[in-house]
Length: 359
Image (cartoon, rainbow, N blue to C red; front, side, top):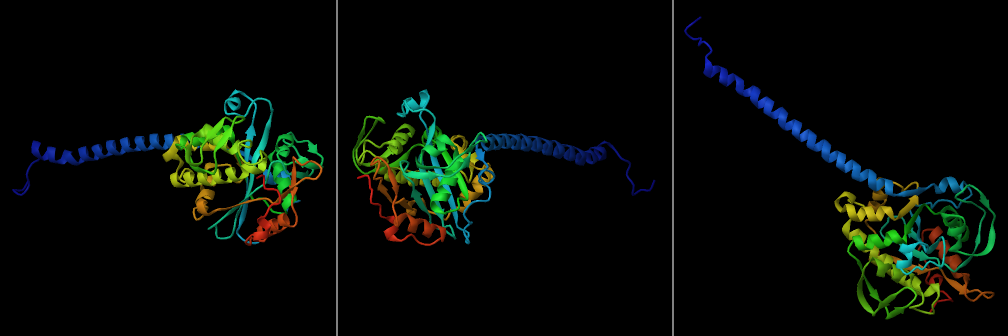
């Protein structure tokens, strides 16, 4: 051993051991981080799976087959939005729906047209009392239901199901429906409560004993129960028909969409889990939107649309000559309205005027 070499002693051994301890400490730290990441990831996956599983899907394309209007030649899209109103059961009785009517109906129906570019949109309300020709459809149970004339529009949902509602709208309008979205009103109440209420500008005093709604005119923040009564009321405004409340429904939908957009519910559902849970539990969509990922992507693609500037139109209708309690699509106005949507062009002013106003 040369004079330059120093035999290893206790101090040298301690110096050599330090890197091993650091490596061991790093492994422990990484292990803890990995466990935390796995635990967090597992929680996020569980939350995602639960929200994803809440959304119910309907395979519209399979149910309707090939006998449908052509898709828009542009990137514009059409979405059929239904508010389904189940009036049976204790919960709906408490909400003012009453238990006298069984089953569920499409209480609210809107065709939302999103033109190419997705910077604006128009919502066309179809009055529930409109008499339509129901085409031949395949029901939810697989049986074929024959075509029938002069049926009330909102009865199609109850008698045959959502796919037949889509087919009926396509036949009466010639407009291809790209997506379907149904909001259950009981879930709708929970959603409004979860987001902290929705503020609307009530156009006039409403005193509706049937729905239990009593409001004074002016800006009002409505909770879930009040909101549900607001979109349902028909005796507290106008002539007591369905036409009178369509303006309220359109107004409320815009206010709700603005609130949902401001809170980015679909863009970041795990950040607002309680709200997202209420929203997804109340939804039924076509199979193309029936996942949290697809729904969020569609919502993000609509970010350029400002609900406050969305145009709302009622399908032009006239009172039926045989039954004045019912309405029929008014021509040539309704034909011109649907033509504009089919061609992705602006709706002419004369196509927005309805002989029956409900006033």
